[in-house]
Length: 386
Image (cartoon, rainbow, N blue to C red; front, side):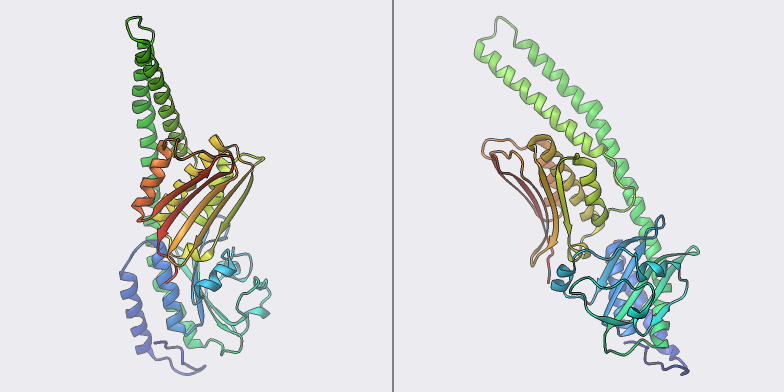
């Protein structure tokens, strides 16, 4: 229950605030990855201030843009309709410069207000509370109410300030933990790529040379030599698959924690050459429930699917789509390239790896292709809208 009923000049109910802080501590003690911590804080911000909507952001310390934006109070249909989350160029980004809460009766009157996207609720009362750690603002809490609802009070502001103070330490710890995990993942990728190149490929290459030499032996029947030639071709194909896999592992990746809104466009820019039209659609609703571990695997699946499309499909258009449905969150990579016949084509190492990652997430990978009409790769993860 909120302690926000304190009127201007009225002595605050300290007991109420202590009760709020204890309840918040219990929520934060549950831990989890950064995404789950942020979602719990956004929901808690609504509770302690009586807000209709609440959100929490993490700022990129290099350029001041919003790196993560988690909200509570929008239903899933509205979230899908609004599309991309804000980028922090208006009032939300302005809060990066603030060290104290900002309370407005009508945010639309503020000089940094830049307007709403189509279909956005008409909000008025606004309360922003910065989360500060190490002498800088790492993120902010935002709370709003619809037009016509009462403004936030001094009591609401104090509740938000106390929540931001508690949140800062937890969020900083979660961010540090995710950075460490990210570094470990990148180091592991480099080690696997090195082992595949110096061990597996060299062994396969040597085996291929031995088999190739056997095809010229005069004492071998013609059908045996033909089978050996086919075997050499298969070995070369496997080596090609592994080289492509190594390229994906060694490809540059953002050093920060996996974040689909940033990383999917990054992968498209990295792998798709100029001359191929690309479209990337990412719904805000899908970003809400995807953990860092899931994001890492989904980015890999996108990377492998894009690499296959570019290397084998000769497409002129590629689309990447991430959305949340009623039963699953779905990542789709679709191209209009050459396609192939799944009944006669073998699954390469990349496809097998994508399937393994999808199953590890409790989901499923579907590869649909028609010769001459392109290929669709779809990863479906359980956990859609309630």
